[in-house]
Length: 207
Ligand code: Z5A
Image 1: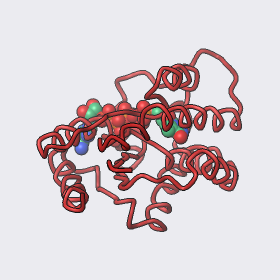
Image 2: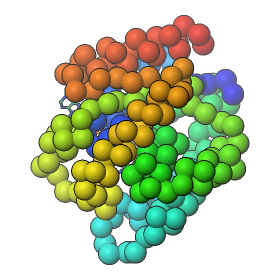
Image 3: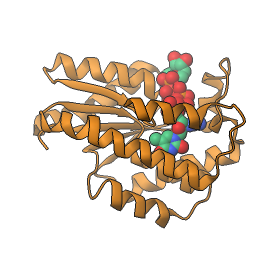
């Protein structure tokens, strides 16, 4: 793999989409060819799965099905978009990836993390992002930023669910601190962007 993969993670309203756009601009200014994508999604199949997972249209989805659908979308994404881009030397910037499955399906839903691990071993087979930016914000602050828009199926969970999600993200960051960098995303947009750029500068210098 010649390119680098950067993922953005965090609870709802953490600012991932905002920062992704700014990060992609920053990388392009540094001459990096970038593919910007998201999970679930990023391919035609992945976007259809995203619709099934997030639409609140009464379709019954068990926790196990939710996890498997996330990984179905991810497998296609890896094969169709991520690995070909990296092989061409492009950088991939992705709004959510593998850590979200641990945070939401294991942390939030309470599924055994070994199930997630088994799927990770199968689908990712050792592949990991080069850098993960965990945009950390208190759950209530994140939700207050998005209060004026409708909630998708997962966003309708209660605050205890999202507290578990946040805690799981932070635990993962503690145990994999060389890959996962925690950014205080309760700060103003430009301050968060500067913190992200400092992390990314180190990766640019290495490439
Ligand atoms: N999911 C899962 O369960 N398992 C998996 O494996 C994967 C995903 C891959 C995808 O949603 C859902 O799928 C997600 C997890 C689940 N579910 N939930 N619930 P998503 O990632 O597409 O959407 P999201 O997480 O709901 O994103 P979001 O709520 O749009 O948040 P965001 O992208 O982090 O925030 P934003 O859109 O950049 O900003 C939100 C608002 O805050 C906006 O008005 C900004 O202008 C404002 N903002 C942003 N930054 C700041 C700062 N620093 N200060 C003040 N205001 C700010």
